[in-house]
Length: 284
Image (cartoon, rainbow, N blue to C red):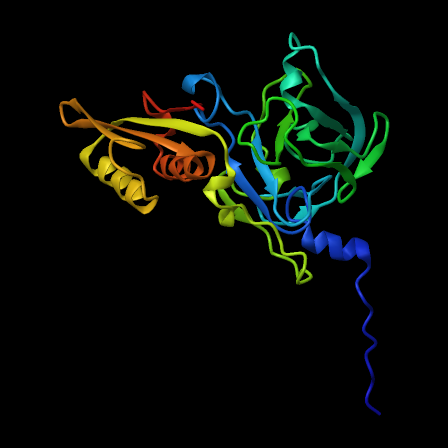
């Protein structure tokens, strides 16, 4: 007699485990990577100690999983030690706006990370003292504090100590340290399409960024020219080519935040983020 197999539906928790690749369900987009200089502050001198992540399909920020180098994932847990907003501008954490800090329980991961930070939130869903584990809702992404870009996102940072510097967060973000979209788009209702920043018209961004790249070789300058042409930038108004002498050039883009992301992505892919005169600043 043939045996029949009973199919057991996945629990909600198991389904969330599959859908949550990073800090939210569905896809996440990295717009600024970890360890770069010169994107939006300090005229190119400010170091970025975390990842700027945009939750594209579900705006709820969740406690992440730990991903080992071999690709295996494990659940982690900890205690919320901070869930607040700082308004005193003498305290640099005011730049984070509403943020959550989770202290991980000891001996869960092989690295030195002990603290996870989730910043620029619009709404907090936990309070100090709460126990949380992978998949638990922490906050809603936003743009509070000194958030760059003009779009909702989460500055995600990991540290060894509460007063230390940001460490490589990719084992917790579930992504590479590179701009791009990660994860899988879930099935959505027809009247609730998934958000996708790559499809947002540039006219919806109100700020203009001035992005400078120099010194560039002739070949690098050709790559900048190709991108400017693809973006439809008119010469002398929003894109300038400057000859520096000795075979070197400078490319200057005056672009929307959306186009600035593409310029910065080109710079990052080619290792131009270490250029002597690589910086970006808002001009309008």
